Amino acid sequence: MGGNQSMEKARKDVIMNSQAAQFVQDKVKDNCVTVFSKSSCPYCKIAKRCLDDVGAKYESVELSDREDMSDIQDVLQAMTGERTVPQVFINGSCIGGGATTKMLHQEGRLRNLVQECGGIRQDGE
Ligand SMILES: N[C@@H](CCC(=O)N[C@@H](CS)C(=O)NCC(=O)O)C(=O)O
Image (cartoon, rainbow, N blue to C red; front, side):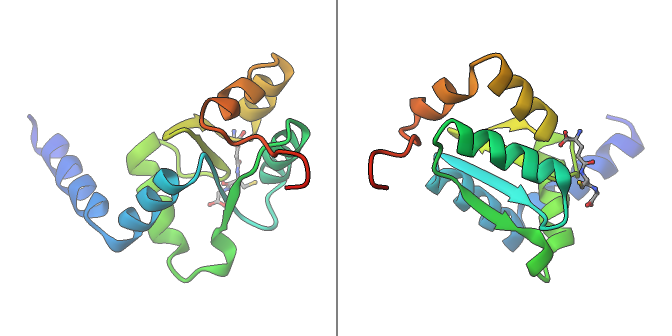
């Protein structure tokens, strides 16, 4: 491993051992669908609209309200390669952001992914 690569790995290790990493991993583990979002973000609204359309229950983690917003984005980048929001996790994996969520919805695949972890709202929920 070259110098830059090992520095990069060391940085990633520090990020993934942080409190913010534990927080992100717990959210992803505890929810069938988790959306890391910011209140003013149009792509986040698109992703949530798609999830609402298929009747998904999801936990939205609103980063704009949090002091550790930047730490959480560092964690998301270490996990997925992307620092942007939204990042949508279904059944433990990141499916991508707003554009990918919309594409999966248009292709009719989003509902099935959510269904696999029991995240579709039942009557009255
Ligand atoms: N291709 C991405 C674009 C997402 C994007 O550009 N998000 C903006 C907010 S709407 C962002 O994260 N900007 C940087 C930041 O807020 O830190 C997607 O489809 O989700």
